Amino acid sequence: MKLCVIGTGYVGLVGAAIFADWGNFVVGVDIDSEKIERIKKGEMPIYEPGLSDIVLKNISQGRLTFTTSIAEGIKDSEIVFVCVGTPQSDTGAADLSAVWEVAREIGKNMNGYKVIVTKSTVPIGTNEKVKAIVKENLPDPSIEFDVVSNPEFLREGSSVEDMKSPDRTVVGSDSERALAIMRRLYEHLNSPIVECDLRSAEMIKYASNGFLATKISFINEIAQICERSGADVSVVAKGMGLDRRIGPAFLNAGIGYGGSCFPKDVAALYKTSTDQDYDFKLLRGVMEVNIAQREHFMNKVLRHFGKNLSGRTFAVLGLAFKGNTDDIRDSVAIEIVKRLRGLGAVLKVYDPQAMYNAKQALGAVNIEYCLDKYETMPGADALFILTEWKEFGLLELDKVKSFLKSPVIFDGRNLLDKEKVENLGFTYFAVGKRTNGLVKIDTRNLYQTVLLNTNGSIGHH
Ligand code: UDX
Image (cartoon, rainbow, N blue to C red; front, side):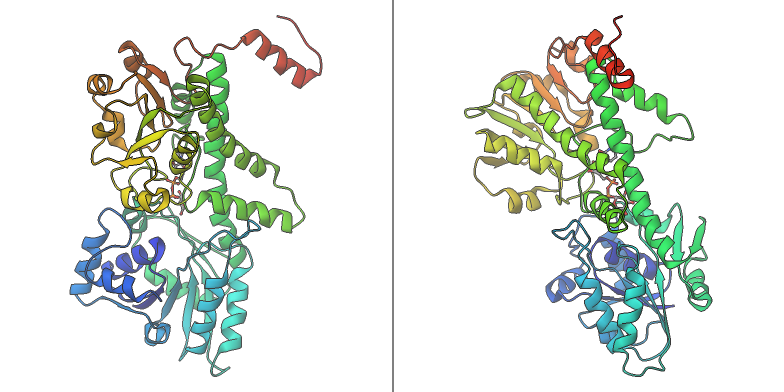
C-alpha cells in the first residue's frame, strides 16, 4: 500500500519505519528539514533500540522516503497518518494547533479519495473536527475522504517491538470503506483489532493511559502504608500481580510517573471530564499522589541531611524519565536533581543515554557529567538511583561502598536488594520499605487514625 506519515517524532518515525518494513511504500513528512536530512543518513533524532537499522534498510530498499512537503507526501498515498505532537497547554488540555494545521494542509492538497488517520493522542471529538477542517479546505468539494482514529500505544524504549506486535489495534471510524482499507494494512497482525466509532477510539487511548497511571499511583500509596507499617511494597506487588485479574505490570512503586505521555494525558483526560461537567475524582487523586511521591522522596533526603545541602556532593544514577530511553521530558529524575541543586548540593550525574538531553536541560552549574556510573561516586555523601535502568540494579555494592564518602543510598526505583544492601552496612532509603532503624511510626496511632477515619470514633487496641 502507499502511505504517508506526517510527523517524525516517536510515533511517526517508528510507524513509518515499521509500515515500510511490512512491505508498504511510505513517505515520511516533517517540517524540520534538518531532522529529515539526519534521518536519511541514519542518525535517529531519538534513542530507540533497533530503529536506525530498520529505517536504513527500508530507505536503501526504496520503500521509505522523506520530504518536508505535505503536498508531495500525500499525492500518491491511500492512507495519510497524522502523527504530530499534542503537548499540554496552560489549561491542562492538549494543544491541538499542529493537528489543525496539518488537517488544513491535507485538505488543500487532496487529489482523490484518501483515508486520513489520526495516531496522535487527541481528545474526544478531535477527529470530527479534523474531518470538518479537511472538508472546508478541499480544492474540489466532490473529493471523497474518510477520517479514522487509530491511537498508538507504543512505549518509548520498546516502541519498535510494540509497533510490530501490539496487544491490540484500535481503529475507529464510521466508514466501512475506510475500515476495509485499515483492515488490509493490519491484517497480518496476530492480535485483536477493535473496530469502533471515532469517539470511543479516542477515549480508549486516554482511558488506557489513565488506568496505567492509576495503577502506578495506587501502588505508590500502598508503598506509603508499607513504609509506615513495616511491609515491603515489592513483595506486596508481587503477591498482587500474580492474580491474573490484576497482573504484574505497572506495579513498581517509585518516585512517580513522568515522560511525554502520562502526565499530559492524565491532565487532558481530567480536563475532558470537567469540560463534560464531571469531576473525575479518582484521576484527580492519581495526579496528586504522583506529585506527593517525589515530595515524600525529597523529605527523606532532608530528614537525613538537613535542609541545607551546601557542601554536600551526591552521586546520581539516572536522568531519563524511565529506563531504555534518552527522553527527559517531564522526568522526575531531572526534577529531583534540580531540587537538590537548588538546596546547595553538587551533583555528579550519569545516565546511559540521556546525558546530552540532560546537559541541555540542566546546564553546567554545580553538575558534573560523568562517563560511567562508578565515576559519580568517589567522595559523594550519598548515592541516588532515579531511573529504572537495569544496569543500576546490578551495581557492585562493595565497589559502591568503597567509593562513597558515607554509605547512604536513596533508591527511588527499588532496584537494589534491601537485605543485601543493609547487610553491607549501607543506610538504605527505598520506596515502600522501612529504612533500617530510622523511620519509626507508632502503628497503634496509625490504627487509631484508620478507625477515626472510617467510624468517626477512636477505638483503642
Ligand atoms: C506510555 C504508555 O505506556 C504507552 O502505551 C503510551 O502510548 C505512551 O505512554 P511511555 O511514556 O513510553 O509509555 O512510558 P511507560 O513505560 O508507560 O512509563 C511511564 C512512566 O511511569 C515512567 O516515568 C516510568 O518510570 C513510570 N512507571 C512505570 C512507574 O513508576 N512504575 C511502573 O510500574 C511503571
